[in-house]
Length: 132
Image 1 (tube, one colour):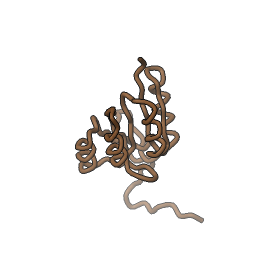
Image 2: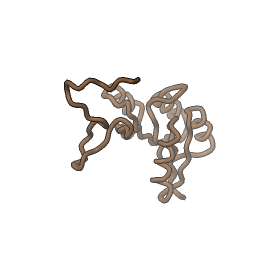
Image 3: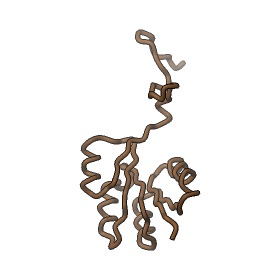
Image 4: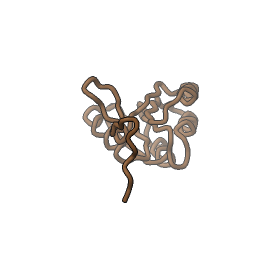
């Protein structure tokens, strides 16, 4: 049987990025909400779920707790821009197998060494441009 992944993220572009990266290796389904993810989990057992921490109607942690109520346990990985130690600890206590911080490419860019830097560097003392 082919491995399967469920991606749960409210941002369409994030779901598309994961789908593009994974679809040649496994079956990939995605959901934009926790409610839709729970519907999908009633009809299919996924090998792993990739969850966002912040979802429109609930949190990824609450979704994982609801997922744990299913007879078949699902491995879960959190990938979120809102990573912090308390959320990581709570995710692991709920059964997540990993908790990763994603970077928003809208606010950061990378130099040649792979280090993050502000997208628009500002020299100290220079005023912000004014809107006219």
